[in-house]
Amino acid sequence: MAEMFVILADYFMKMANKCARLADISLWRNLNNSDGGYIWDIGGLFYENGE
Image (cartoon, rainbow, N blue to C red; front, side):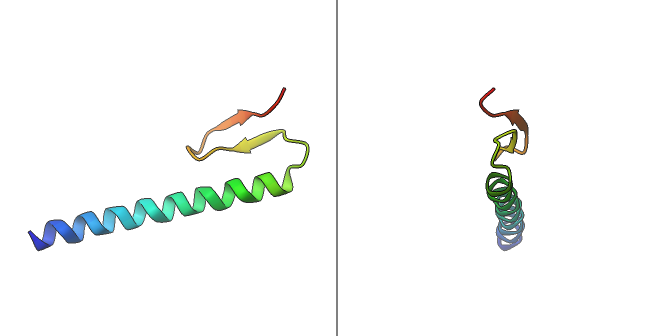
């Protein structure tokens, strides 16, 4: 049972780190892309903002 918990904890830490990196990218792109061309959404996909 303890081994399962460690595996799950490791998985959630990796997911949290991935989300944090995506959030950093999103913030950086929003701050540095004032014309609102392409913005990185939280799912990691590109979409066009305000055609």
